[in-house]
Image (cartoon, rainbow, N blue to C red; front, side, top):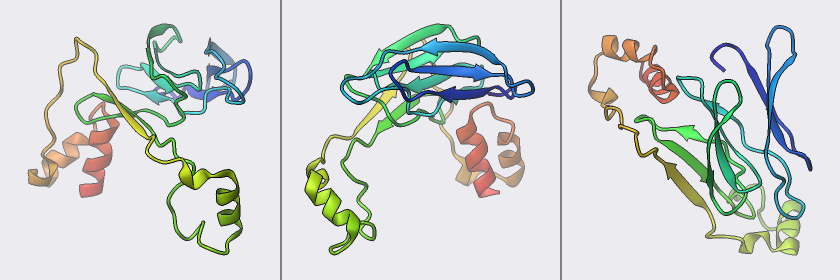
Length: 178
C-alpha cells in the first residue's frame, strides 16, 4: 500500500487477504473469502491499492472485492467464476479485471511439436480450452471518469507533472515517455 502496508493472500481451503505492518511484520487485519469450487481454493490474484487506499482483488470464489484501507468490505461483484488475474486501474479510474481462462498461453516455443509440454497439453486437452477469456470493466454508478490521456501531445514538463498522479497508469506511462 501507499503507506508501505504489505498484502498477502492465501491459496487454501480457508482463503483470505491479509495486511501486514512493513516494519514489525505484525498482521493488521484479515479479510476472509469463500473457497472456490472443486480443487480451486484461495485468493490467487494480486491486490491493487488505489490513490485513496482502497484495496481491490479477485477470489477463486467468483467475486471481485473492494475493501477499505482498514480491511472492511465496501462491495463485491460476482463474476460467475474464479478470478485469477489481478485488477488494473485504467487511466480514467475505471477498474478492469482480466481473466485469461485458457488452458495454455499460446506461446509456440513452449508447446511446439516434440516438446515435453506439448504432450501434456494434448493429454489433458488444454489446447481445446479456448474462447473463455473475459474482461470486466467495473464502474461505480457515482464514478465520474477522469480526463482522457493525451500524453503523446504533451511537453516533457507536462509529463513530469504526471509522475505525481495518484493513478499508477498515469505515472507509469509518463515515465515511459520521458
